[in-house]
Image 1 (cartoon, rainbow, N blue to C red):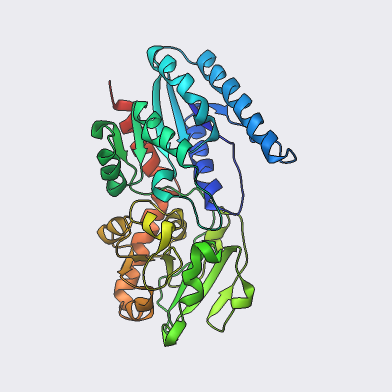
Image 2: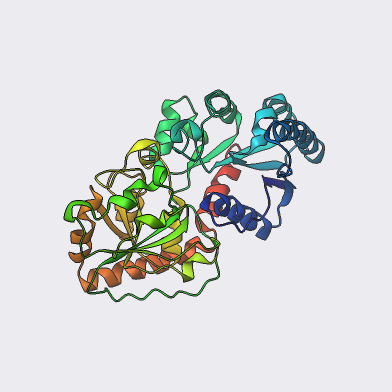
Length: 358
């Protein structure tokens, strides 16, 4: 039997909840068995939440031990807080004959937190990602760049599987057309916090991109920074966003600078698959991507958009795309969307993981 872990289906306004929830849906469609990880009661003070998590974690792995038997498979999603007590059980599960597969959503020792939003726990991250995940029988990572980084950190290359891109489950109608507007525009979706996405507030600095309209979607937007070229559309549940996105391209960028992707989150783009890439493509919208981002390889190979060194080049780069080139990009985005909406990339990676060791 195949079991899988996660928090449960959550329709929140963040990509952080969307990707793990989609994995649960894809596993459910294959009729795998769900072993749910509970969130602590929100009303509990933080110190008591930590105690609650520890006690539940112990209880959770005892449940996994009891449910599984020789020949079973357990599909785990990282990060989950229950991993902190997994060292007590992973060897027992392995010796019991349970195959352990992990899908990485975020590799925290690479991401190093999100400035102003998510603090990093170096001790726990080093323990989990530096040692614990190496004990899994198969590890599904984001892409070839992350795979090479993990090999350099001592991971067995034969256990590592390249996801390529995250899928994006939605049944929204395709509303984007393939007609390139005379005036260029981009969409930006996600956490619009200044310490994470400060570049938003500098796109039009010093006369740059003066003809570029920017459509914004997400939480934590600083409305006092509005100007005639920034249009804030509000925040929506992730599953509903594909019908809301407006713009010739979706932007995949991060960090405080528009000149280059800067800071922890900017550097992280060199290794991760930003979930907003999947959102735009699942909407049928081609993308503008930082040329040094790991996902740029996938975008270029599949002709799904354009890459730029600096965000200050965005308007000129969009204007240089011909009407026929844009139609081709939109057609390719729509083809990719069909795959993303049906779990193509997760299922492909999972099937490879299931075959390892057979």
